[in-house]
Image 1 (tube, helix red, strand yellow):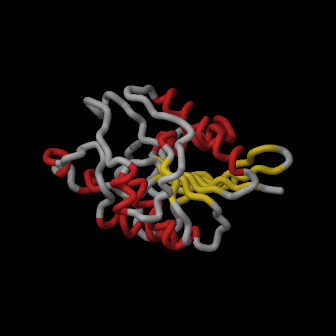
Image 2: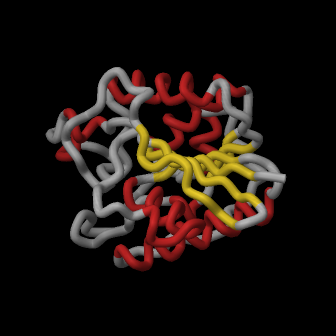
Length: 215
């Protein structure tokens, strides 16, 4: 019996489009999606409509939850918030641990959030890229094992998406390029182990943001 793990990066974020947003934002390290990001999230949802997905897990940052919610609406599924898929808590980007909405507040905005779910892994500020990949890889392995043989979708950030894929298939998931917005990885488990079938596909997007950023 096969199991598929889909892994996707969030859509475009508001501070990529409007950098000045960061200067006055209440939670400056937790931006929402931009208008075109909302369109991208819908396009990703359309791409996954024909796929079998049983569970959706998302980083608890607003942009990942919004991306996951677009998909959850299409597939009629709940969203499980998983801190192991969180942003790379990089002190070079963030002067302090990022403030974000708590789970009850997010659940008020997005009723599909499953508030009974307990995250597998904790992300601790500050951390290195290697630590981010280690915890996101540990998260993907743990979720795949616990929910097998169900097919799951993980929504994360540039570093955690690649780390989650590498946690299943190893270095072959890293082609040296940064993960693009709304890109999609497909990893399949068969008798021979985990196989990477799709790496970083964005062909489902009619608009792809050209500014390549890691987070």
